[in-house]
Image 1 (tube, rainbow, N blue to C red):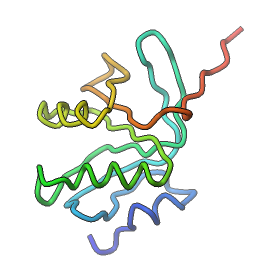
Image 2 (image 1 turned 30 degrees about the vertical axis):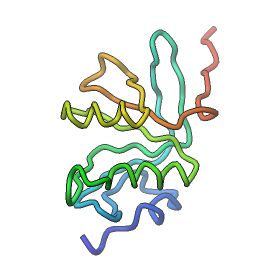
Image 3 (image 1 turned 45 degrees about the horizontal axis):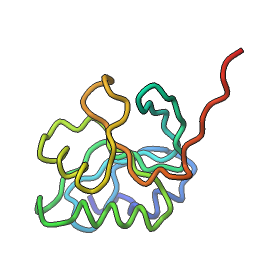
Length: 126
């Protein structure tokens, strides 16, 4: 795992747009960079810039590593999209932190946070 980039280094890359990264308190963290299409109710949006979290495993679950990760990403000025959350306890944690469920009905629950000012409504097709 020592050959992995840090999260901050990864976010400066133009390519690739996905990678496992090193971050304090995390045993494993898989992220993507770039925008993501989301639905909220009947509305369709593009969110950018965003860090997409595809997989996260804390060294000591329940000890604040994920909350610290969220604070770090917010400090970088990005929204956070957590995809396909299967763990009910983690779903509750995301809601407690202020995440909202998006893309309902598209796999396991997906959550978005810190998206104010980062949502763009696509132009309607004519």
